[in-house]
Image (cartoon, rainbow, N blue to C red; front, side):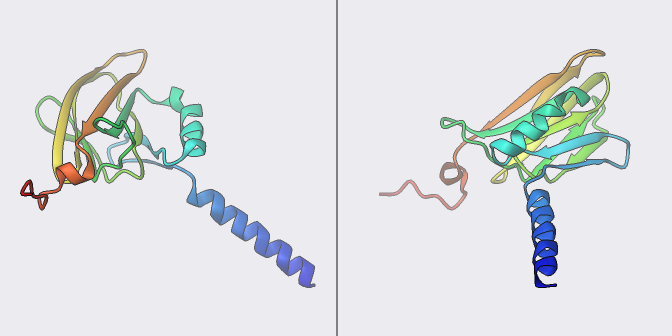
Length: 146
């Protein structure tokens, strides 16, 4: 009986461990399919294996080091400014399926907002790259006094 209980516990812990390292996917209220994550090589590989399902990939990194960062907020609007998608990302990489058209992608990290216009083609995928100053440089409390 003890071996059965230990085996069951192992199965539950393995399932929880796998879920903890999995990217978050879903469908937004307006039908935009997304996949957000990319923390760790395994998760990036998992996401890349599903990459063909999406027409936009948003990448977030630190300027200079190109080390990944996780934006506080990511949102997409149409050319008129109508919100199409919004998310608090789970990692530095977010895959989206928006459909063909013109969009503006915005993201924030350490309170610094960046935006880029993008045109999604009927066939293919686009990448948007955001680079922010390092956490110390972007901090409003940083002092240049010596």
